Amino acid sequence: MPFGFFKKKEAADTIFMGGKIFTQNTNLPWAEAVACKDGLVLAVGDYEDLSELEGKDTEIVDLEGGIMLPGYIDTCGHSVFHAFQDSCLFLKKGDLENILTQLSEYVSKNQDAAVIFAYGFDENYFKDIEQEQIRASLDTICGERPAVVLGKSGLHCWINTIALETVKAAAEEEEVSVVSLSYLLNVLEPIDLDRIPDALPINMQEYCRKGFTSVFDCGAPEFFATLYQNIMVDLYQENRIQQRFFGSLLLACDVNPAPMIRRLAQYKTNCIELNEFINFNTLKLVVDRTAEAVSISGNVLKGLCLEAGDKGFDIHIDAIGKDAVIEAVEVLEATRAAGYKKNSFTIAHDHDLTSEELADTTFRQDIKETVSTLNSLDNDWLCIENAKSVEEAIEMLTIDAAIQLGISSRFGSIEKGKHADFVIFDKNPLEIQDLSDFKKLRSVMTVLDGSIVYDAREEK
View 1: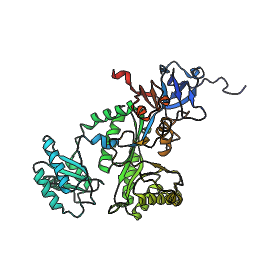
View 2 (view 1 turned 90 degrees about the vertical axis):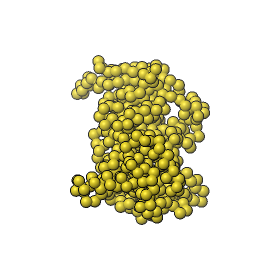
View 3 (view 1 turned 90 degrees about the horizontal axis):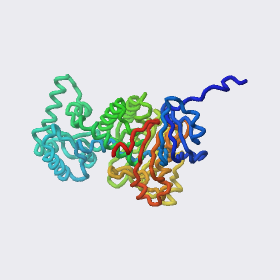
View 4 (view 1 turned 60 degrees about the vertical axis):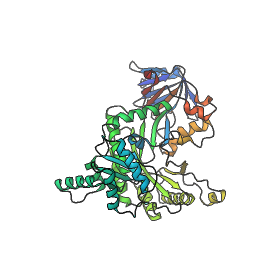
């Protein structure tokens, strides 16, 4: 008799049953039940077969005739900027006069703010304006409170006189000889961090209603990325996470590659032992080759991609203009050819290449494409903008999204060994004909690692 023939099967933590399960696994497209243990899918199949995995402590969740799918993955999200949009002024594009007008209006509406903080001026556009001129203008608008305006790249800022004096005094007291931008922002503390942890659950709840269990953030500068990651770690420790977060570090101008990649490595290190609830493995680059644009130069772009590839990071490039698309493809293909085969590479763009252009620039070497993620803070469904049908949209939100992010071995379908991330609807999304109606469909439940993190019934 073979040893272990009568060994008892492993008991599941949770078994979901009582509905229809669309797995996105071509070998078993539909199932009746799924068993989960330690956050992973233990088994998928008929409930009668899975019932033998039921132990005395197993929780049985009745889907009540609902439809379960793999949790949706947003590949074009801006969760970082959404978290801070009520805590500072996000500047609209304009000349200096227009920027100053926006700031003046913001100052008058925020009389209680200890520090006036704005983000988003184009450093390249204003590179020839003297700092003293900017400071004088800021003093006129806001002379009694510190004011700091962070550039779009996150690498430069404008400050008024009282902010300058505050930072100088702190540096003298602490005997800091070189004042970096990071030090300046730490001293001024322009963001009210007490407000953010209350805002994040609201954003996460809305994602839950739409069926999302994971979101890839399409890039934020170091200042915002650092604050957001710290807050997310706190929420994780408080067991308040409702979506997995896949972060990226945004770069839009020439920098020394090595320090930036070291910073990205630090973000990744901070995510160790967080069970993939918080992730940071992507370098986000913006490459603009339209007329008169000042962007990451060709040599720096190559250096950043090779450095990121060597350290195992994924690369996501927003390419603006046909020339930028072609250059991005060539650089990423060269990075692949350098031996970096396991990294996930994506080019986001809105340029339709002609057949002649495609003949010379094909998306070889496993480089993914997606729509441009710039200027899309208010488009929650940008990731399926090019979908031609509901079936295609679901593919793009699940298995295709996981492939794009390089996580398909762990996410994107309901299969044994993958993370138990699910969304449940009371109507079958596959039976909806119109994409606009599909976007309006609301979930009744979302599940992360086999645990229910959102239940619509609790909102009633």
